[in-house]
Length: 197
Image (tube, rainbow, N blue to C red; front, side, top):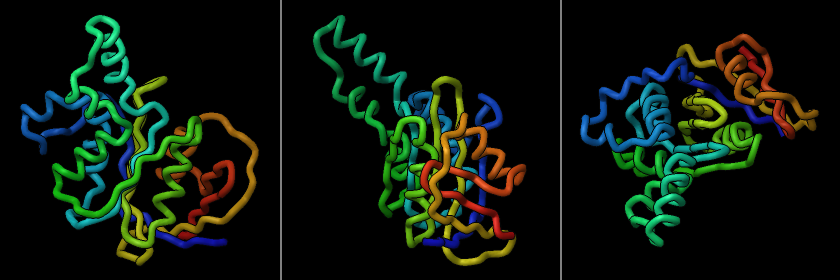
């Protein structure tokens, strides 16, 4: 199976100084670290149209989960609002509500291969899809891209093909090099993506 697709926009986390000026201050203060990364990166790639969303993260809302566990240990109960904000898909769901996106979204977690599993999911969509990977462990990391099947001006063309690849270190760093055109291919455990032009 060879799947051709295009990447229209990309965004890579470069520092902790994220541009969240598009979010009202009161709402901004309530965002968790991973939600801040997710919102900033998605906003840079979002083109204002209804798109499908794919969110990938190995650890998700780990900071909120630690707080909930501590609260439960201390008080014997947890706040329903805090619990709702701690689920794996909380940040991508909040972004879709904030932007009024009515299309579907998926949340993917696949251990050390969460990024490549989410990217595969995004490539597999038949409609334009906004993909984001974000994590806060072992360090802040995040990348987003807008993917579609139709050529557009200045879009890069890619091809995915099935291949069994040996395990490699740091999937995130390899993916960033691939997106920033420092590498021609991105290899994942069961597929390879090659930049065509």
